[in-house]
Image 1 (cartoon, rainbow, N blue to C red):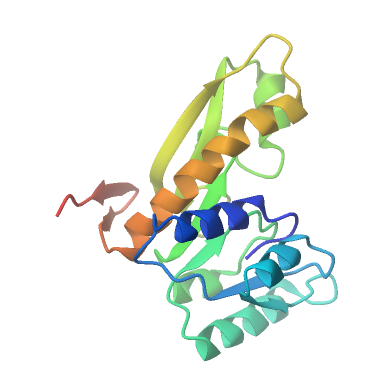
Image 2: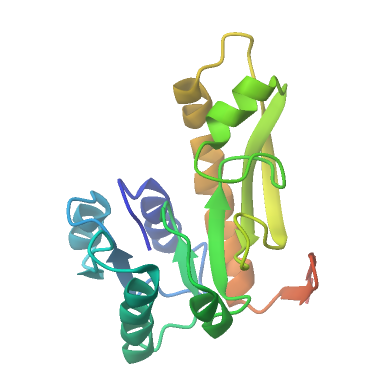
Length: 196
């Protein structure tokens, strides 16, 4: 699921083409904005897509439409790749521990939509990105993996976003492969990755 340019969606496509996520099939893209560039990426790689607009629906109505489609397509895992909406508890319960998100900060620091701005404003020296499972909070689910970057004294929101994005593109496919291979064991807030 994506809302914008879909660079993390592209990272998943590229990883799949390189054979790095053999246990995952990229079946379908859902976007909530009809002008999302992620649609062009889906077309180019012949991946099915559906536009379900969110501006004209309640959260519940939107999520019910998405859940209906996911059921029809027999989707087992949902990846939020730059999807900028909060999911309803019912959606999360339906896909408990099977919704993967990528967030541009070292959670639990700086959750929400303005992670780069918040990190710079706070004055941190290190930030990064987090691949995590989605729970009913905002960017509060169990953490699968993280990567860090060092901030410069001249860091801007744009430069930090660029610096972190390449690592998002690296860890999201790895986290998806772990999730689809059944190697992730969730115990409350803690995730154990099986080596077998």
